[in-house]
Image (cartoon, rainbow, N blue to C red; front, side, top):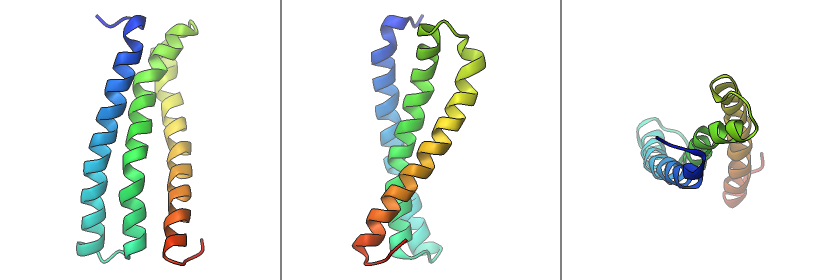
Length: 111
């Protein structure tokens, strides 16, 4: 059984797993978007570079929020899913726009 003492190990493992899956997915989606869907190179690059950190953030939150709820004395089954959805949505948008801003500047474009 997993206990609170296992939290750092579980969170690290899940974060790295999310990052690696995101890297593979980002690369695949970026290539498909550019070569097969006709999406511009700068937008395809933004998509490819946004998916890995977003996957890492989502997996970190998904594994860490239940432990945080237990630490705070809350029921993780009630709180973790709605909180995770909100955090992932907000961080996903922030991540996308921050990366898009940098990539667009590299291409000489303004947002």
